[in-house]
Length: 356
Image (cartoon, rainbow, N blue to C red):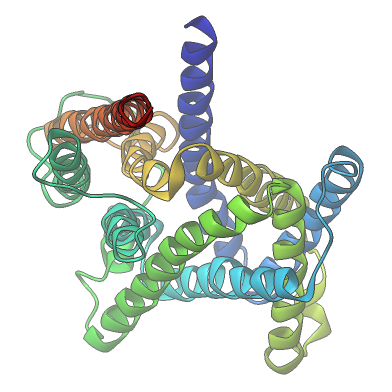
């Protein structure tokens, strides 16, 4: 029993750590783009660092348990890289060009619903709304996404009366959000890019599940995915970024942002995400995505001096209720599956006895 509890605790800690890493990345990527780092060069360096970090661990730690590398496996990793790295990171950076990291974080809260729909359509996630577990998972996903949208769309009265001035210009931030921009076309284009980012991210998590089931060497899968993602971005960079100056580091801050992106937002995050998906499926991982909105709000208040509003607390409560419902639904689903197996075994034994 204690072993089961420790596994659940480890799983929850990994999911929360994922959201902390992603929340920090929103701030880091914003800083990098403000410094003038190229939107094409940034992911190239990011994936080089991730590959250098993950490759040796994958080679030595999974040397004995690694299944043979087949052409079919390489094609799967290439496709995972296409949707999970190239499309995912590319659409995100393009979306940030027109909109703010805050808006990008809000758009990402559609990932749980998209992942849930994809996984259910591909029968990777069982959904039986006539049972309590299926209804709980559905309602939990809706509550989590709804809570995140409350945080985004409803401020409410301020909770703290801080005298610290915000580090960001609210006028500039409003313009970045698109609400004060006269160019509606750019705002729409930014939303479309971020929607593409959310779709590719959800597809990446869903398609990882069957690959990891057939090829359980998680670090090897992640390393090959990074490798093909790097190749794809290098091909894009060869056509779009020919200025050699864009490939140079002009400050220590630029180097640090790229190191964070490569080591934490790629190397660590990809490994944690693969492990979590292998443990409990893509929906359980995706449904924790709205936690990131809460973390971003807290980090913005503590680091950037932004105000905390009651809307954030209300949204956070909905998110926590939603997460609890989904996790409870997953637990009940496993209990139903175990009960059905036991009933099937019992019936089989009775049939054998009656046949004697």
